[in-house]
Length: 307
Image 1 (cartoon, rainbow, N blue to C red):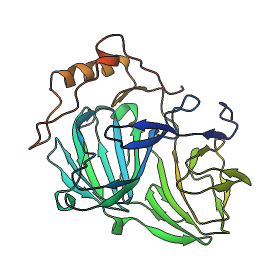
Image 2 (image 1 turned 120 degrees about the horizontal axis):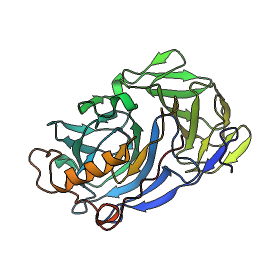
Image 3 (image 1 turned 180 degrees about the horizontal axis):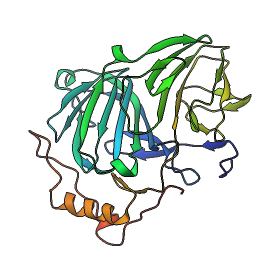
Image 4 (image 1 turned 30 degrees about the vertical axis):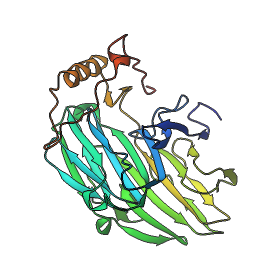
């Protein structure tokens, strides 16, 4: 493992408990790597069994300066936000919410599944917005699974979730070059991934794989050297997620649910949320309060992405 852009980096997950026993594996940000392309946050949640009476709802909470990108392998989630959006997220769809100057949203168990037992499994990423667009009006876009381009490539099934690859372009709109692929590699498969973006990383979802001949354990992220692709292979069937894009246009402060190129903007957002000035999700009264740390007791820990 190394922290130089000229070498391959291996990122191991850090388990985070979001409450009620709902755990996620967090790959970004990491101590040795804060971002890949525009992506500054990468959480892999589940598989988690949802049962009647046990809810892992995420109450209303705020964001600024980023887009949240939600993608399910299994299950369902109900998205609501302060724009009035109400959208059930189903497997294979891309939920893209741009916070810009500020948005509030919740993620809950759909009413239709309250009495059911089912599995939730998926990813949530954050893409930092370019500095010129950090304060854009918030917006929400849902792209159903049926609208996501899919193709057979080198014996693998590839879904082009965001960006462009292998002659296919996703309809998801972004504000900077962004790449997000779902690659299903069969047992014994071999796949040559071109340098589709200046920065690229590969995440093994549920099984081991090999990157350029080196075995990579499940739940590991491999950040490729800048401007390079890789040869992907596996003995057993594996799902590989590819993320990347153009590098960020400067460092970002990341604190709680806020991302900004300006430290003072993070503090302002904290004050706004504490005073409930960031909007409300229609029909909801619950919310996640501003944490006492880092905002209340001491100066916030505003670690940045690399310049």
